[in-house]
Image 1 (cartoon, rainbow, N blue to C red):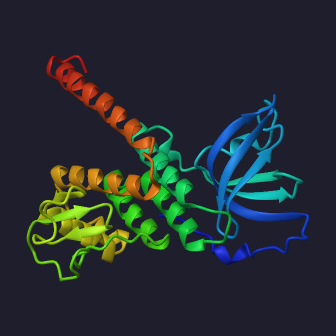
Image 2 (image 1 turned 180 degrees about the vertical axis):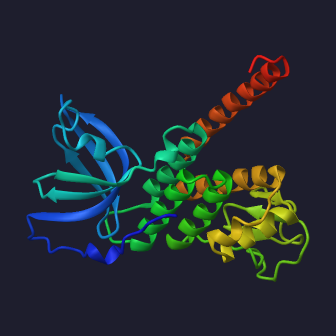
Image 3 (image 1 turned 120 degrees about the horizontal axis):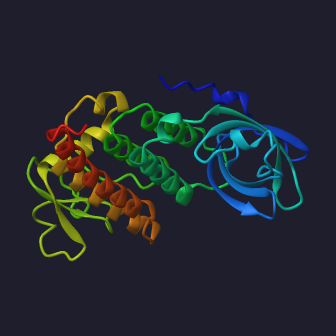
Length: 281
């Protein structure tokens, strides 16, 4: 089970406060000087922040194990002239299931990259909770494809880019149960009358549309119970990646990493099966 402490413990502090405490997820980190790290963190009460963890790369640093990438921690920060400084850190959840599974780690990196592109330095507790829940689900063994599709739709809704899946974005008519078209530029589905001939439109199968609609309307526990074919999963992955690329006006980096990891896993599986058939396992 994913344990979430109440987010209300972390109210926005007045700007005159010299030291403040916040929960945070580490999104990115960068080496700084000989012993420091520059961290990009996401917090419930302050949004995305860039902070410095001084001395964290020293062998005896007490903070090092509490500021791992994609970890969730309780931080005490001191306000600095340019960047705030992490003075104390205590891990709340290291999401251990991500550390020994490259596929899950890749999807976690994808979730973090997407949030990093949209997040700003302002309070957004629902978005923080969504990120923590998503990392927890990936760590605990849920289907990564289901986790990230549900995450994408929830995040897009929260940041104002909810795709339209029930009415044609061209004419406004209610979408009927048949194969339709999808337009990333228009942000939704086009009916058979509006879609054909448009350069920005691509087909979306009836099965794919039904799954997206179900994901958009229901909780994760509900969507995790339905079975989705690999063909539909692949279709939705391509569609959502294209939509995010259009919204962000740039390609994300992590999808290529996920594809490389999948290729490596696919190469290993036949080798293992062959060895077992020969009695070498």
